[in-house]
Image (cartoon, rainbow, N blue to C red; front, side, top):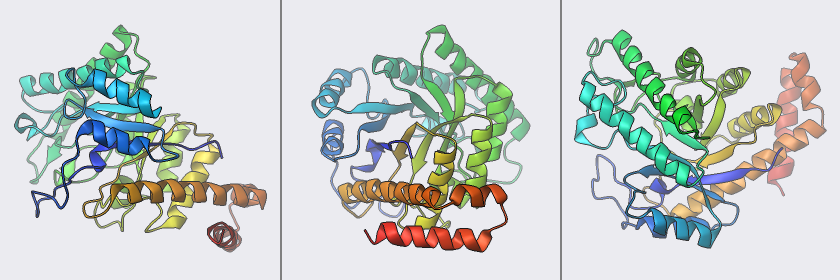
Length: 334
């Protein structure tokens, strides 16, 4: 496989709260200290963050100095459009024009900040665009408003000559009962409708899993259209978006995903979207790093032992199962 470049979302290494414990189990960690912590971990070369909660005009210069101190890059920077009261019913697709304008402006501000740091990716997560009750929202209108908001955002990208790619990140539920574009193919429909080279998909593995998707299939579909611009890795048991380290629940699935990424020659970043509510964030990051590299080693060993021919034929299910088992055994045994 091509070298694996890993980035970590800094929202994951501070005190994390949930709806049952709104104070969390840890201590708040300042933004600059979070970046320093990540910079001390071998094999992690990038960070991901939000505007304005983690970076803004007040602390941007300090962030730049800490990045330089630790040889880190901002890989993904998005605007927070789901953490404020005004976004409780939606953001880019909200029925209120003023709310939509505020969401567009927030994304534009994130793109402007990203340009200062040569950030390659900015994610759109439609967290509050959707519904909780049947027939609560007019989805025909939701999609129309969302598409128009995205077009305005992309106009901003092109008017300023930004190199940043804007990516939709699909998720089926949480925080809404139903988030619009809840699965990969739905998001890809909108991406292909807009048909802009700066507009693509960020595949969050955990989100695809709770949508009961065959991730190998959906990932291949994105790549068929050349629209895979970023990835978020984590793991869960397909019951909730637990954001555990990738490969800790289903290492086999991680191998499948990396096999497809190797097949298409993916050279983007491997983002970590982790939520260690009760545990040491450093351990989560290190396990993720190691599992990604071990899965990549399995992929390489499989290809050395005939996996490409087996896949091309498409008839050797038991043979592929044996090959995967034996290659995982060799790699994991050290």
